[in-house]
Length: 81
Image (cartoon, rainbow, N blue to C red):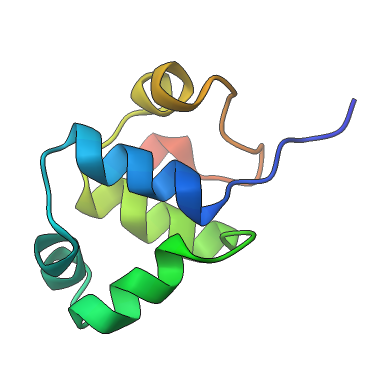
């Protein structure tokens, strides 16, 4: 079974669910709005960045799956949420 890759679109959905603008999301990650915008355009989010985003958005593994329709990849440290 192939693991679903996490895209910038999945991150955008999380941000919207949490009621955050891109500027707020960037602030939580200590990056600019412009840098955050580039994340949402990525084809694939690397595991270390996804871990940071999940923590910054206070998003659980269950929330992620509910929003996106697929589970987090196995290399994500879900003990952090």
